[in-house]
Image (tube, rainbow, N blue to C red; front, side, top):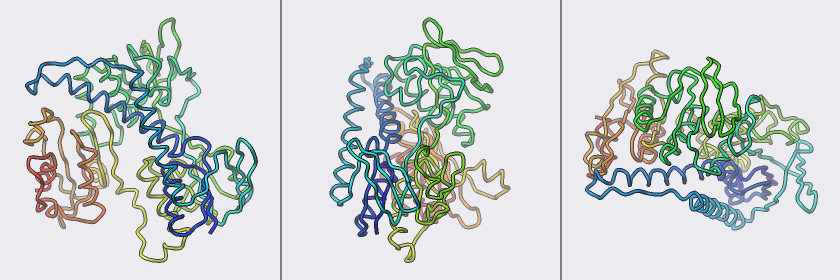
Length: 450
């Protein structure tokens, strides 16, 4: 089985290693970083900087834990060096794993020449490959609207901000989705004044209102300005900064502006037309096996138009490798996108999985909702951070766990318990009867399941 993969991000390199273990002859084409540009140049650096901001916040809370108040001083050069070191280690780790499995690596730009032909432009030559199966996993890039002129100095996309050239005195963040709120948290922790343009009446539109309210309360406590019900429609450079123009006439004068308004798929120049592969607004529509309309051509990760999460991309890659090698004819569980856990790395962290309370009510579905604040958790009080809550949604007739939301410290880790329950069809009693460590934040999960 000759399997050619275009794109070495979470989907591509997972598919490559898994298919190679199953006996495929795998060639992986990557034009940038093994590990994925979106992953290694967006996700990982942002979380590394958020960790730095969290450490600074912890020093500010030291007085409440019986310690003398400490003042942490931010060293942006050290932050940049740390980010580079983390990305370098992850990139090397992916390369080592691929090479250990016998995957052929080509550094260059790949494109399809026909249904079974892939052409790769490397620095030294043009390589033509014959393929029995092809995976397109080329990721995405930050969306830049026509009214914004990005210069990488004052007007930034997310990839210009890890870190930016200087700590913004006043940052205007445009976009209140997951990426936007993470940047608000990050730079507020670094001491920047932050204004957030919120096009709706709550941050994180589509998320649980209780979750959004908790995050908004934290932002306001940090001095963040929320500009609600406004859409940005222009950014003007001024002598010492920028002015963001909103559609309702409001103006936000700031030192820097950051665009966090989604991403666009990297599907141009891939020769998809030559292979007969259909696209929709740049995305490659796929079925439950991640196949395009051309059966042996697959798509995964951001370019597939499914949930833009690294965890989802990795699982797609694994499922594709199994399908390519014919294992789907055996016991096979399709990827359930509605059961994927996700997290937002603000402080406090936010995580959710499965059915949301607001969606259940919108559909007229009967549910049982239980909610426990971390203020009742001994471990939260010991740690000096009792913000947030655990909410579990279950079926009132069967007790089966349908979903949940967590706001609080380590929410991204704790949500795994609820995610397992949702995926495995466990009942709330299964969580209640689990003997949790005491004292631990996880005890709040059992309390919420009562």
